[in-house]
Image 1 (cartoon, helix red, strand yellow):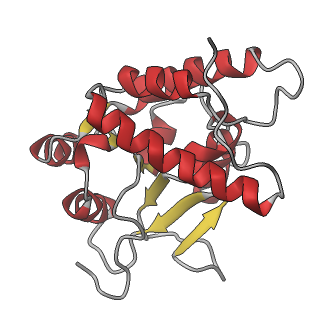
Image 2 (image 1 turned 180 degrees about the vertical axis):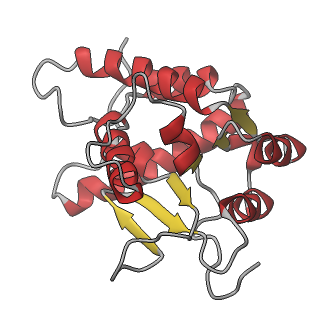
Length: 210
């Protein structure tokens, strides 16, 4: 581990190989009008911000190689609740991603997004879910576009998922044990409760539909 630049979280839900995801979503994913690495990073991050609900963005980490980090910015920062981590002090992004996988306290709840076989093998050794970048991107785009379509009052607000949507989504990504799903649901609900407290909203859990 690089002690000056360690992993930011020990329990992310999504660990994303940033450039790998961008290159593998060329036909349907984010655009990059200026053709630069900075443009690729910005377009990918913007696409994830508009696609993922807030409560899932909080558990998402994007890792980029450190060869061309943005000038005048830290190598680890949050943008709209997504953690962006440049592999400064590591040989490459793969090595930093392996460190995230190694220290994860519940790797069965982790989905590693990359088409890189080295990282996929590291994820599978820890019993995390490894998904090819294009497959994952299509799946979340479909999953959360459907959720947005059901929101008639504020379709662009990326609302929090309901209880049933959380469980259904987790099963879709291979988190199908009741214990694991319940643990993750509790973590997400705690985050939502904190957000409601900060906004001065009631903190009670919404009742399930009868």
